[in-house]
Length: 237
Image 1 (tube, rainbow, N blue to C red):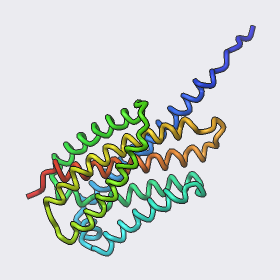
Image 2 (tube, rainbow, N blue to C red):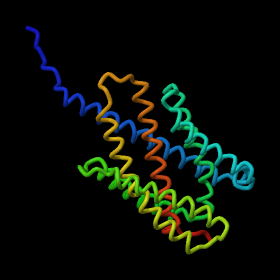
Image 3 (tube, helix red, strand yellow):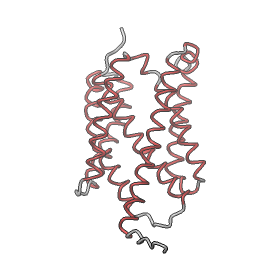
Image 4 (cartoon, rainbow, N blue to C red):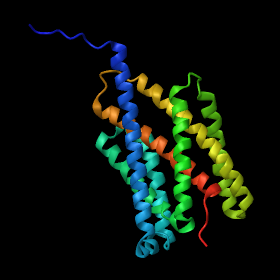
């Protein structure tokens, strides 16, 4: 006699969909971070690549402009892209970022980079868990942190001209606070996005949402890491 299995409850199906989406976001973020790390380390081990990228300002700043363009296009146009195109652009961004971030291996010791990475990873994990589990609405905090981010950008541009080590350190400490807050806020925003997705949403649309979420958290992690590296990193002699 055939056994009739009860259908899964709608709220159970919804929770499975949410968990699947969040897992996809973090998987893609991890892939992006791994690509960035491998590329940055590889370039730092090659003198010819160092000369090509870091020794040539035109190429170096060209790569930075390319990164900014990819972030802008992904953020503004992802809804009109194919899922494969969005994925390729995210991977390309992670690789380009690795090329430019290779400079940190020349400025800081390996031990301080590794130690800072683990501190950053732990901090990021705590903030993500908080953003995922808190019942408090973090929208107002997110808006405040975005204003802080604008202030950091302005102060960083000004410091390019006055070259103040004190201002640089102040910006770094404020930056840590800002990106800690943004990590929690962005995580909560992604959770709400996952919870409001229609159950019958196309796989390609879900993939694009996961890529955009991964890019957001990737940027939070990288910027938090760089701010912490300025504080904790040990420079090479």
